[in-house]
Amino acid sequence: MIYFLYLCARVRTNGRKLRYITAMQDNTIPLLDCPKDYLIGDASGRIMNEYGRFPCKIQCTVFAVLARGNARATINVTQYDFHANDALLLESGSFLLIHEFSEDALVYYVLFSSSFMEKNTFQTRLTANAMHMHSPIVTITAEQAGIMVNSCKLLIDATNCTPSMLNTEKMVNVYNILQMTYNGFFRAQSETTLRPQDRKNEIHYEYCNLVLKHYHEWHHVSKYAETMHITLPHLCATIKQVSNNTAGDLIVEAIITDAKAKLKLTNLQVKEIALSLGFDNVAFFNRFFKTHASVTPKAYRLMV
Image (tube, helix red, strand yellow):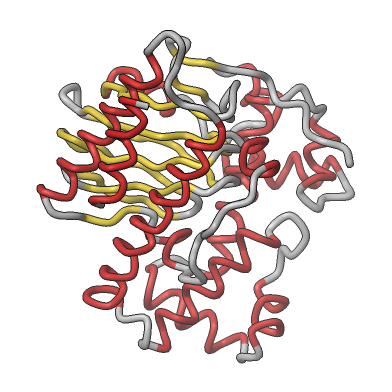
């Protein structure tokens, strides 16, 4: 944390791709990906509520801290409550749907675009800890949150200078420090509260990881059980006990969330979306979507 603040002080003084529609909120918060290599700023609850209209598949990497207020959001296939002094890490490819954000909420964030992540080499990346994807928030101390907020403010000031005091090389260093800092946050949390040694939690984390990687091609729980080398009944019972959801529910949730995001944020035809999610028969996909979303894909796309 000290190194992060030190760096900020130095900066201040010295194949086929989906056709995603570009969407910005207040010309500041990107709905999908950063229009440039990085963005640093703060956002109110009013602005963040824009993410509550429909699920978004975030293409950028997000580091954020909730300075005040509270929120409730679904990230990937799990709903979370956020409170002041919570730190958030969203990896590229994460699904986000905000259900509620208090009016007094204030978030400070540092975003790195997918192109920035692809074209640069970093000293550190996410640890092998699966909790990043399934517990993307961690409560830190008020002192730690204060340092993160002040660091973001310094970076905002550096960005707003003319010319900007930030460049790609410095932002690679910022990413490395943020990543190490957040890895430390999550490691401390896992050691004290998440009990990664618990076999049931390990199965749940591994299953969720596999679902998020393969939901577009593996629609049956039996395939996941086979890959994990455990029996189907044991997998189903464990997922139900840990998450209070059935194993099949998590697959359906991932498919429907992705479908909703593509319907709202791309120009893809329904048939193309169905194929991208592993459905060869568009009629079957339409029935599947209506069963779980209560409307047809075309009707959902037209909803405001």
